[in-house]
Image (cartoon, rainbow, N blue to C red):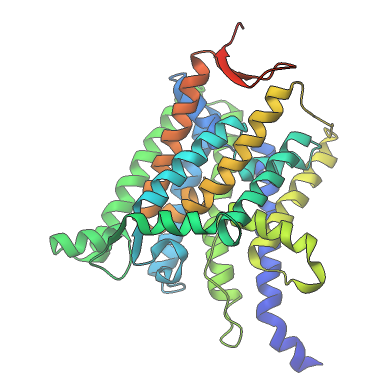
Length: 377
C-alpha cells in the first residue's frame, strides 16, 4: 500500500498543483476582471487604467519568476513548447492576428470566459464550447491538415538549439547568453514597471489600483508556479509529463474531450487547470452572491460570439497559445515565437477595436443575409 502511494506521489503532486493553479487563477481573475482586451481598450482611450496595470504587473512577475527558476537550475525551459528549434512564422503571425480579432468579437479570451462562465454567463459557455471544438479540430481533426500546411509554409531555420531571444542574439553578436538574458529581462521589467507607475499615478494611488496590482502579481506568480509543478513536483522518469505552464486554448478542447470520453481518458495538468478556474471563480461567485444568467439579446450578438470563439480556437492553436499561454507563459521563456504571437494578438485586437470605434457592428435582420453596416448608436 505504501509503495503504491510513493509511486503515485508525482502524479498526485502534479494534479494537486494543477488544481491549485486553476483555483487561484479563477479567484484572482474573477476578483480583478483580469483581461488583455480590457487593457487594450484603456490604451485606445489613451489612459492606462486598472486592467493595463494588472496585465503589466502579471507579465513582469511571470518573466522574473520564470527566469529566476530557470537560472537556479530547477527547470530546463528548452523542453517547453515555446522554445522548439523551429519557428513557424506564418502560422504564429496569422494565428495571433485571428486570436486578437476573435478576442474582441467575443469580448474576452478563453481565460476570461472561463471566469465568467462560473457566474452563469451563457454567452461564455457558448464561446468556450465553440473555442474547444475549433481548437480540437485544428489540433487533431478536420482542420489539422490546414494547420500543418500553414506551419510548413514559412518555417524559419534557426542557428541555435532553441528560439530564446538571448540565445539568438548571442549567436549573432558573440555576447554571453546569460548576460543577455539579464539585460533583456531587466529592460522589459523596467519598461513594465514604468507603465505600472504611470497607471498608479493616473488612478491617484487609489486602493482599487493597488488591488489590481496585487491581482496582477498573483496571476503572474502562477506561471512560474506552474513550471515548478510540471517540471519539479510532477516530474517522473517512469511517466514523463510535458513541461508546461498556464494556457487555455488546447486545454479547453482537451477538457471537452475528457467530459465526453471520461471512461477512456486520463486527467492531465491542463484539463485540471481548466476545472480549477471554473471552481475558483464559482467559489467567489457564491461568496459574493452575484450569480446571474446572462444570454444573448440579438441574433447579431450570438453570431459575433460564435465567430469570436471559432477564431480564438483556430488562431490560438496556430499561435501556440492564447493571451495567457503565449502572452504570459510563452513570453516568460523569452521565446521569439511567443513575442511575435503576443504582438500579433495585440495588433489583431487593436484592429478590431478600431473597427468598433468607427461604429460598425454585425446586423442580422429577420430575413436576408448578414452584413456589416454603420451603427446608429
